Length: 341
Image (cartoon, rainbow, N blue to C red; front, side):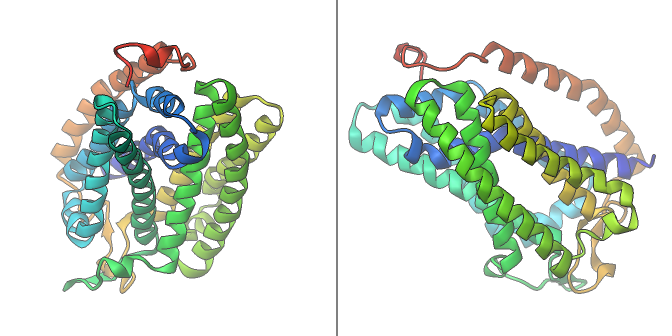
């Protein structure tokens, strides 16, 4: 296997794992106003993700770092063409982290209410901006030898917005299912109710996304050229159906696991459809940024492969350990301790 192809696969895996892990945090942020009715319940929500949310960001940093190191040409032009959107995304991620940490520092309704709003708003922004960005990458950017012929507002096209809304619904469902396995009582019951509602939204939006992708983009062309790839979206569909089956049986841990698989394979579906492009050109395919015309040298990729083989398993083992340590449900008693958020 060529090293460019290997790193394209790793690039896709890093993004998929990031969305799987941070997706439930973003979803929890967005749905917090409708499932958390008291200050204690809001604190419980924050404490369900408190030990893990910053660790999840490692996968985002690694995905960005892998893009920079393996495909520097794509990294440079992507951060140039999508500068405003990515800058807004960066601010949202920063404010989200600050909100979690600062909310409980002052015992004031105004103080806490302001940070609660920041938590919700940044959740929506993170999901929407990621969705819009990847939607535009999936359909291709208007770029050629003269550069990018678009603006920030041209990113807000129907396909980009559809992908953004799909990310909103997907992360909201994922977050609700996470809350259902991490809390108890009325808070858990509300999360279970909303998980069912968001499931239907994801189903409708996923169908619309696939239909639009077939009609308006070349994202699905690889699947018709290499039918074996159809296993990827089929797993995503099977996992989405499994979520509903497990919810109907009140098997919430299994439903959340199926949700993780759904997020992973929805992202894999998009990434596999891009190959060998990283950012296609909607003007002329000859100007597309591919894994071959924007990659680092073979020597660099070899060094990166050795480093990845050593450290990625370590990170995976660490994450498994962390989630195992903090696997218990969070209760009111847990948030009444000095170390709680």
